[in-house]
Image 1 (tube, each protein chain N blue to C red):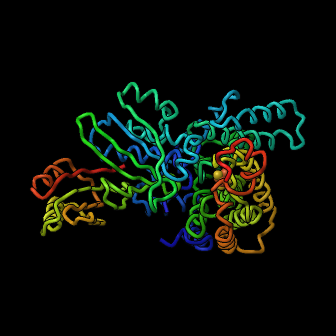
Image 2: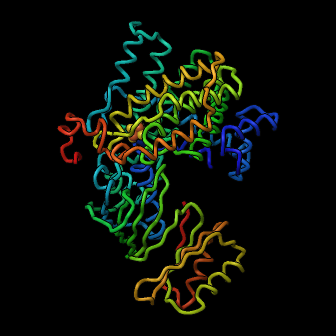
Image 3: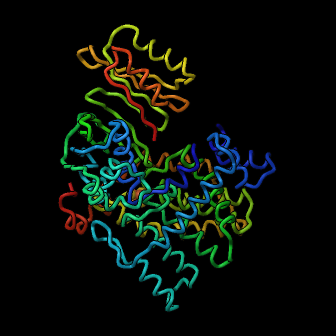
Amino acid sequence: MNIFDLIGPIMVGPSSSHTAGACRIGLVARKMLGEKPAEAQILLHGSFAATGKGHGTDRALVAGLLGMEPDDLRIPESFSEAEKEGLSFSFGTVKLDGAHPNSVLLRLTGENGGKLEMIGASVGGGKIEVREINGLKLRFTAEYPTIIIQNHDNPGSIAWVSNLLADAGVNIATFQVTRNSRGREAIMVIECDSPVTEEMISAIRENPDIISAGKVNL
Amino acid sequence: MAVFDSVESLLKEAAASGEEMWEYVLRASSEEANISIDESWAKMSATLDAMLESYRSYDPEQRSASGLVGGDAQLMKEARDRGTTICGPFISSVIATALSVSECNACMHRIVAAPTAGSCGVLPAVLLPYAHGRKLGDDDLIKALYVASGFGAVIATRASISGAEAGCQAEVGSAAAMAAAALVYLHGGTPEQMANAVAMALKNMMGLVCDPVAGLVEVPCVKRNVAGAMNALSAADMALAGITSRIPPDEVIDAMKEVGAQLPPGLRETGQGGIAVSPTALRLFPEEGR
Ligand code: SF4
């Protein structure tokens, strides 16, 4: 129980789930993309679609994509900030099967052409969970240093990654593996107890079975 | 850790430590979060600054996204300054502060969720006028926030602080309970009196539903913060007068959780019950009404 969840967070109103949480989802997506987003298709689901506008969910999501934290006073003006930063965005609604009522599907293209499709959910009190990346279901909060790896599902990749982290002195808190239906690609989500460096990520990328690797920490 | 699992253990552990309640909450929560006492204090101090700023940022002209919220705090301040209110200047300031901060939240200002954004007006509503009248310093208010968060942590652990889960009793009700404990502390009361104030404040909001019009944190949220603040004041005064809750605080918190579970989904932040489906609300927001 973190007492700063009782007196806090410091945030731009009006809703911890629909404003602060939405901003954090945008922020995590930006970090996962690993570059400045240039284009964003934002599809709102459930309560986000129904009451998002009045709660500033739309502006908060764009603010997060621009790298703003939930207490950033520029959130209400994020649309004009986006114009200055060269981010073009569009909004729509979507019905996602079995998704949390406060969910959003983001389709991003970075300024260097990188792509990311992510479903994020705002699960209450400003807390969020990433629920899907590039069509693969998973679940993490980004509150811990988290490594996300997409790989060809060949024997030994998991052991290889965990050995590499052990050699770097990183303690693994949780380790999830998800395969897509075809069974040829998998995603590893690794929550760590200590910070993960860019060098470790580069080292992970050297394995030919690894398609992509990135890290995120709010 | 077990400290914040019950009011009973909170009182017992604090007494055993020989520390004041605020000091105990500060130390125990820092140990749990693995941060230093200084780091925690600095963070709470920044939080208080943000709370004060959320009050100062009020603008009588501001209006919320729906246009339903704005201007009410100003009307209350004017009535207070004319000296025509029934409750007198102190209570009128409490009402005006609750409205100010909650209106600021609805208008996308920066606020401190306490415990939630919808209930962010309750704590500042009682703390600011109280401190102003007595020339208290920031340190006293920071200590009061630790007291409030300690009892709030128990409510969050045993029950809920989410309107979607347990109705407004869990948001404004919990805020009132936290504010009552903080007031008892500032007024020199004992930890037992704080606990009694928490129990009485929560009991008196038991069953309060969450029924925001159009699903927005505007109506009835803003004015409900006033009710929470007034409830905190009376609970604190009762406890300080030596009145006890006949039902122990932990049992009250458990009952609040149970009531929350029994609330139909329409009365838990879905905007599909209570005030949200009143004819006027449905006329104003035809799309949201189902
Ligand atoms: S009515 Fe619902 S949304 Fe409004 S303050 Fe209460 S719990 Fe929060």
